[in-house]
Image (tube, rainbow, N blue to C red):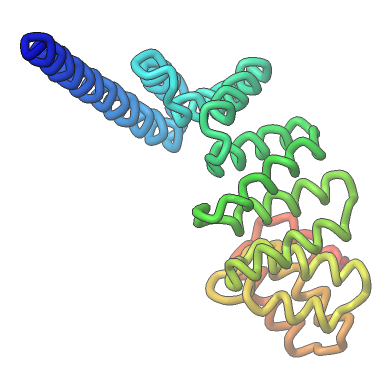
Length: 247
C-alpha cells in the first residue's frame, strides 16, 4: 500500500511538472503573439499595411486563441477592402473574447463604413457596457456619427451627449451637437456647444460654423473675428471659398 502511495505521489508530481511546463509554454506563446500584434499595430498606424498583415498573421499562427491578433487582422483586411475576411476576423476576435471593447469598437467602425448601421451600433453599445473600457467616449462618438449616416439625428444627439458625459472636452462631439442645434435653428445652444471646439486651434469647419452661428445671432464682431481667423489659417479651404463667395 505504501508503495502505491509513493507511485501515486510521483505521478502527481510528474503531472504537476507537466502542467507547469505546459503553462510556461502557453505563456511564452501568448507573449510572442502579443509582441507580434503590438508590432503589427505599430506598422498599421504608419500605414505599412503589408508588414502589419505579416505581423498579425504570425501572431495568429503562434497563438490562434489570441483575440487581439484577429482584431488586428480585421483592421488590415478592412483597409485592404477584403470585407469578407475582415468580417470573419472581427467575429473571431469577439468570439474568443466577447468582453473586449476594442474589438467591438473596431468591428463597429468597420460595419459603419460599410453602411451596416444597426449592426455597428450594436457593437458600439457592447463596447461601452464593459466597465473596464477606458475610452467609452470614442464608442459613443462613433455611434453618433454612424447614426447620422442614416439621418437618425435624435439618437445621434443622445450618443454625442453621452460622449461628453464621459469626456467633457471632446471637440468632435461638441461640434456635432453644435451642428445639430444650428440645423434646428437653436443658435444660442449651438454657440454654447462651440465653446470647446473653438479652444486652441479650431478647424476650418468649426470656424465656418461659428461664423454662421454668430451671423444668425447678430454678433457682427464675433462673426468678423472668426472670419478673419478662417481666412488667415485656412486660406485654401472649402470653407474660406464659401465665405468669400458670400455664403
